[in-house]
Length: 620
Image (tube, rainbow, N blue to C red; front, top):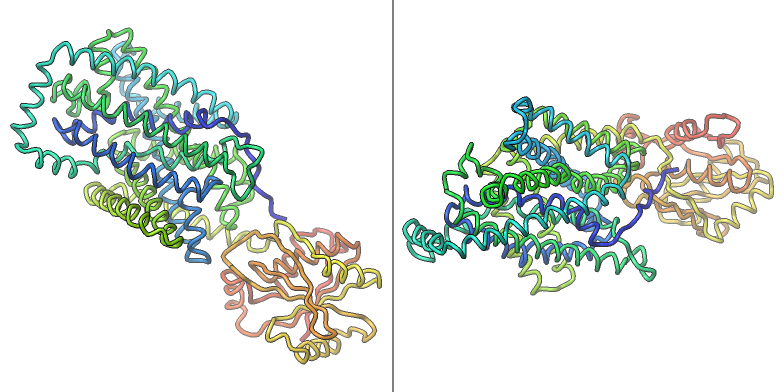
């Protein structure tokens, strides 16, 4: 039988916020520099646009995602509800490809950025210069080691790192504000530059809106915020369907993180713009990718600056933790359930090793370059945020909340524009994302085909009437089950079926039989619960079940009957008509087709001892 995903130990929302915050808050290490390069003296205004979209767009979107997907699936889970069957599964796999791009590049880019901060610190020995690749791989290995130990250890480290990093940033931000107040001419110089370069306020706003897509990396923490929802502690009154306290905790997490980050972004973009020479932001300049570290060294001394560097390196190293946590929550919820990964993919430790190996490969491919990975990172982030905005818009439409449809629709259009703009400017990002998507599709369908002959039933249960039928037959010493395809459920079709099977399979007239009908609801599903019920058509007794595949369900039901009664049942089939290859493909994609031989093969694989296998009969 298929296994259910293990339950995770849960924590307070603020601790989980620190786990997601190691990614979200760590962007302070490079976001002001990105804004300065993209917008120049308009950096503070462009950052205000980013903050406005964060608080008025992304935050409301993900607060709704948290409510409608409380088990960590995010917008992907919402689309799984909207889009059932195979097209829905393929669409979800595509989104998982972009999620894998986002989360994997978060790990590799952050580790590479941490390595860059190590070698750029003036106190680091020259022997380490030029060894970014080795340092990055070591940082990734240490990250994997933490998760091999467990989620609780990862969250404990995240709390310490985030608390320390935010406290140091408060010191830098306050120092920057004091320096600006002590030298008010820097504000005058800045405003003169604004007027000289852009003229009117309308032109300034227009340019800020145009450069906004370059700043979108500052939105990276929302998807991981909902992906790790299962880690948030609930309350006694919560139900599995609607864990109210977990939803409230996640919404508080998202709001708190967004407000903290927005405040820091506004202040730091301003002080870095007015206090740091524009040339220092250029590639190779002392403030490139480390604007706040530059201020820390410049105004607080190399000792404090080194402490700040160490904190930045530590949080950048561990920024991949939120991405790893997101992957460890997403992958087990979809791929094993779809049959598109082995059952061991539900376990944390094997997945950590797989993700670490992929991260090593990506690091080698990009030669541990931060700049080279930026496009892929931005693409993954923006596609996931866009999908979330579209998902909540569609949800509001289905619930006839038309004012919210308008609001979420506008947000969706903004993110669609931002995503397209990013792809046009940096097509390398979508190229890598497509490789991730193709890899997930190929591996997923290969796994699905390899696992096609598993039982695929999570649990088999019988309602009261069906159980009584089984027990009555067992009391007579033999259980004979005739499989039947539903037509119109008329007495005549059951009479003809019974007569054919008694004649072809030599079933004595004195031996009672029961019919078994499997109704395929969604063949794209893999592991399902099976509830067997009884239907009576005149004197004919019929066991019926809704399932994803006919032969797998028949095999699972036969074994459940054997285990319940201690009697090994007999099952009777007719040969399927048509081309065997066509029938096999029908089974793979539609759950039907070559039923008799596939059922026997499933039973053979599930039960090594022949004497314990249900007896399979096929007439000519």
